[in-house]
Length: 224
Image 1 (cartoon, one colour):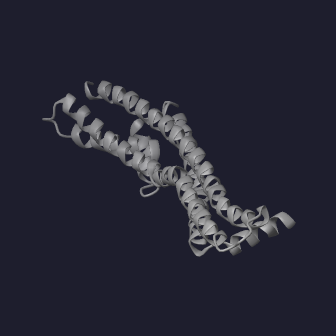
Image 2 (spheres, rainbow, N blue to C red):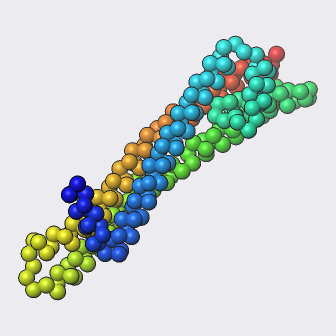
Image 3 (tube, rainbow, N blue to C red):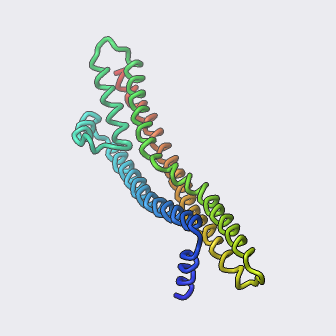
């Protein structure tokens, strides 16, 4: 308890610039942790939805019936379902036109799926750049606060005739807290960014495989 109080005292006694740096780092850390938990839930739901849809898709269900069930949930469709819905809707629309070449039907369906895929990628990537920014800049922001605090401490020490460790330690400690806070903000942000970037790559690869497999199925149907 005494250690916590001493740290709080050092923060309270720090200069206004160092305090502003610490406040900025605390806000960045809180936003990072919030985003980490939000994105964690987002990727967990996306993986579960992909697995559930793949089970239904490969269970032998008729594509038309599956499309009706998916499109009935308009506004709530995302991920692999959204890719399937876009592709099959375009396929049906073009297939009804008797003068359209089967390859044109397939290409139109693939374009629709690619558009839907890019939309899903944008959704998954949303706010990940913030974690990268916090992870890369927080140590330098903390270092700025430390350098400023040390400069201020030495200026104050210049007014003292006899300098001892007891007089130097508080000012240096106040400044070093900014560096520590910068690291505390950066480390979770970097870990979160790396984890979710990897999760996103695997999920996008899964979507890509589905696009190719579904295109093969549509190609067979288009030539029948």
